[in-house]
Length: 110
Length: 115
Image (tube, rainbow over all chains, first blue to last red; front, side, top):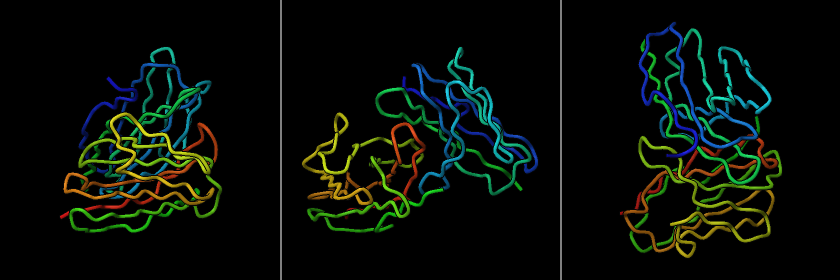
């Protein structure tokens, strides 16, 4: 299977709840990045976390990285209807090209 | 963040014609640009990696004679879909990066419909 597999594939929550998405990968990475895509649009970069980092925050977003488990998680706190989108993780190896996962589709109900 | 534009945003063409899609990095010089194809509700499929002044590197299964990529400058890459067929209908997205393993900045995408 591919690098950067997201879990779950789809997530539906109420506004105000937290949303957690996970990403697993197979080979060593230089960094891992999370992107958001609104329907029919390009991707927007959210956070980059390097292999020597364990956690990063950006506003309501919190990303963790566990290189021993080859996994990362994206937490969106106090979700809003505007957070409805697809979220992708992308792994960047030390050499070679990046790989995008299949994405998690998040629906936040008002 | 940096801005990448893509033009056109939407194009409808007849089968057998060619379509050119432009990707520009507006406020930075991109060492590398990428072209992706995305089918509905699926992830991005990398088609090719484009470096300024050199030939593009195509992914396995991508026909380089059908999807012509030209990276004329550090701010412009073009993808030409030649002799388009209905099965080429898709969402094409480009991205640009400032340097290797930096974040990628994506264009808004081009919806191609071949009738």
